[in-house]
Each structure stands twice: as C-alpha cells, then as structure tokens.
Length: 409
Image (cartoon, rainbow, N blue to C red; front, side, top):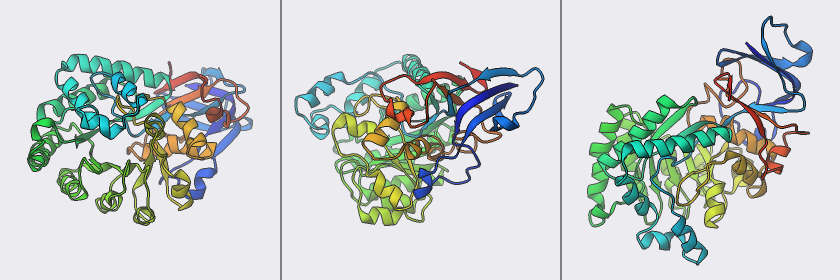
C-alpha cells in the first residue's frame, strides 16, 4: 500500500453518479490537511489527517504543502495524425481564414493525403510519443478520433493505431469513428456516395471488429448537414455506437437539437450558441464540451461557458488536440483558458477537466474523481497556497509527481 500524507488540499472528492451541473460546478468538493491510501492500482481510502490510519509497511509519500487531484480527462482529441501543418499556421498569420485554407486544399484534406501515405507502424510510433508526452502533462484519460483517413482502409489504419495505443497505454482510452470529418476529394461530386460508404461499410465493419466506442460527425456549413448527421448517427446507434458530435463551431444550424434527439453523449465546440440550443440541452443527458484551445489558435469566438453553466447545464473542457486548429494537448493550459477566456472559476474549470470530462467520454466509473475504488491516477502539484494557483500560473510546470495506476512515474 501507498499512503500520501499531509495533503494541503485533496480535490474532487466524493461520489459522482451524474455530471456536475450549473451552480454546483462552483462548489469544489475538497479536504484540507488530508491523506489518501492506495492499494494496488486503486484509491482505497482518504480523509482528514486527524483520521489517518496506521498501516504497517505502507510506503509513505509526504505531500506537505501540495495539492492532490485526479489526472485530467481529455474527452476530445485527434491525437493520431501524420504530420503537423505549420505551413497553414503561417497562412493564417498572413490573413487567410480556416475556411479559405480548406478551400485551397489545406485543412482536413491536407491531413488526409499525408495520413493515407504513412505506414501504420510509423503512425503508431508518432502517436505513442504524443500520448506519452500528454501523460507527463497530467492527462489520465483520453478520447481519440479517426477522421484523417476518409476511406475504409485509411480509417481502419487510424482505428488500428488507437487500438494499439489502448493496449500499450496505462490510462483509459476511448476510440471514436469520425469518418464524417469531411468529404474526400474522390467523392467531391458524389457526397451521397461517401455518406453511404460510411453507413454501409465503415460503421458495420469497425463496430463488429470492436474498433470504436463512439460515432462522430462534423455537422457544420460546408461539411455535413443536419439531415446527413442524423442518417449517420442512426446507422451508428444500430451498432451500439453512441454519438459524440462536432457542432456549432462556426454556425448554429440545428445540429445540437438533432444530437440530443439521438442521445449524444456530448456536443463539442459550441462556439456559436442560440437560446434554442440551450433549450434543447436542458433536461437531456448530453454534455456540452468547450474547446478553448481551438478558439485561441484560430482566433474565433470562445464557447459561452457562462451561458451554459448559468442555464444549469454540465460543462466539460477538452483540448481538441489536432494538427490544424489546436496543435496542443496541454490540459493545464486549457484549464487556465477556461478561467481567463471562458470566465469560469477555478472550481468550475477543474471540475470540467476532471469528473465532467470523464462523463463526456464514459469513463467516470473508473476515473475523474477522488472516489474509493477508482483508479489511482493522480497529480501531485508543486507547493501551492490553494488550487486557484493551478489556472493562475498558466505558463509554469506545476506537476511535481504523477501516480498512474497506483505507481509513481
């Protein structure tokens, strides 16, 4: 057993049967001057130091002055990709918009061409290096999408890589089929044919092989319509794939109401949001996910987090790590952005990045909070006066020790 003692603040403690919503997000459940006991790879017990048990032979870790919290849960990434798109970064500096770059053959289709040409083993090794870097930054659970293949063979290659990462990594990983990320060049004059390829070949094949947990679609002007999204989600649900959907990044076209109708686990982006969207989310089981790194990098509006939280809804935050619009998987920065740009309190941001992120990728039964029986995937910070310092010191490395599956790394 391992016993962490003298914890200055132990965060996100308790039982969580549902996502934390609305005003409750502003109430951080924590214990001051705490201990935490680890048995094997699980949280065995925790509480105030005045009640610390005597454990013969336990390995003691003194956390005096330090904060202990669950590792981050990043519920939206595109971690598996071929190469970066630094050239497009310069194009944006020179004034081109994301849409203009895409219309010139850049954007998603640029990544598609590069990924199709890449050997699966090389793709895997690159993705594994990225994943290991993110774990070092505190990510303890992650969702990874396909969507840079846009053919049966290339999407399978991506999903194979994610499956290999699942076996190799010490943290929970979820795989999402995003065949509907864009229309590939070879189908530019036959979009219906490509949608049928997704419905009739990709979904049945990959679901039967157990290669994906969720189904996703980029529902946006210039990409996929609401009707096309509904057809794909309907096909996915027949094979047990719950939706996690890209919606409202640039335009509000009714995608949120449709996603809720199909019981989407999450709706992600939401930089544009209407009162009708809020009404559609109210009373549903669908979690809103903000991706502030994308807004920061592209210079587009930020998700109106206050509007979502003040409406009594749950909110999660994630990195959207991808080579085109959010080339960073640093959840520490995303937590700081949530406070600085989305006007969320530190309590709301940390909850959004831990337990609500876990719910947004269906791993909350195993991680995302300090709960007895959950995985001991923990961060121990450098000495800090309070958890407010976590987003406040956004440019500094504040993780002193990581514990993954009960083992210090």
